[in-house]
Length: 436
Image (cartoon, rainbow, N blue to C red; front, side):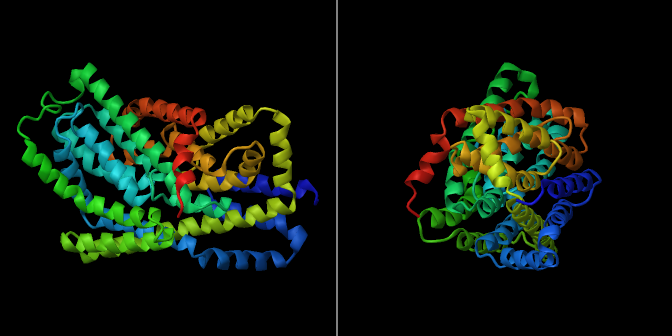
C-alpha cells in the first residue's frame, strides 16, 4: 500500500482549497490528481480523461439533465403559479391555511424537480409576497414552511440526489426512488401536522379566515384539483413507467421532460424567453453535477489505491457496535451539512463512509435515504444552513426570522431520521417487493 503521507497531503490541499472558496469540483479533482500522480505519473491525466468520458456517456446519468430540464420547465414555464393556486383552492379549510399550501406544493414540486434548493427558492418567491406581505401571515411560520418543504426535493422521487448516489454506490436507482417515497411522504405529513397543531394553538399566526375560508366551496376545491391534475399526470407518467417495470430511470426522465414540455405548451405559459432560461439552467446545473461527479470518481480511485476502503472497514469493525458508528457519521453529516451543499457533501464523504457502513451491516439503499434526511437537516441547521440563505435571499426577510421558523422543522427531520433507524422497513419495504 502506498504511503499515506501523500494522500493526507492531497486531502489537506483539497480542504484548504474548499475553505478558500474554490469550486467543489476543482478542489476535489485537484486533490485526487495530486494523490494519484506519485503512483501513476502521466497516466493520471489519462485516467481523468477516461473517467470524464465514462461519466459523460453513462446511460443512467443521462437521467440527470432530463430531470433537471423537467424542473426548469415547470419553474421557467410559469407552471408554479398554477400549482400554487390549485393547491390553495383544493385544501381550503385546513388549519394553517396557505401555509399548508406551501408544504403540499413543495412536495409536488419536489417530485417534479428533485432539487431542494430549487424547490425552496421557487416556492419562496411565490408564497412570501402572497402570504406575508398581502395577507398578514406570521413571517417565521411561512418562511420555515417553505425552507422545510424545499428540503423534500432530494428525498421524494424522482430525486437527482438518488441518481448520483446510485452511480457512486453502485446501487439501483429504481430501488432508491422507492426507498425515498414513504420517508418523504412521512416527513411531509409531519410538517403539515405540526403547522395544523400550532395554528390551532396560536390563533394569531394566520388570518382569522385562513382555516375556514367560507367563501370557497366544494366547486372551487374541485376546480383547484383540476388545476393540479397536470402535475399528477406528470408524476404518474414518470414514476408509473418506472415502477411498472416498463421504463428505466433514464427513459422515465425522458418521458417526464417531454410531458412537462407538452403541459407548458398546452397551457400557453411557456415563452421563448422561458424556454431559453430553462435550457440555460439545465446546462448550468448538469455541468455542475457532472464536474463534481467526475472529480469524486477520481478521488475514489485515489482512495482505493491507498487502501482507504479496507481501512474504513477495519475502523467500522473496531467499534463493535454499529450504532456508535452511525451516531458518529450522523454527527459529521449534520455539522458539515451546514456548510456544504447537499450534493457536494455526499460526494466528498461517500468514498470514506460507504465502506464503513457496509462493514457495519447497514443496507446501502437504506443508508442512502438516511443520509439524505441528515443532509436535509443540515440544510436547515443554523447558523449557516444553505436553505436558510436561499429563502432569505429570494424573500429579503431577516435571516433571524428564517431561522426561528425553520428550527421546529429541523427537529421534525431529526425525529424522522430516528424513526427510520428504529424502523428501517419504512425505507426498505417497497424496494424489497419491487420486481422492476
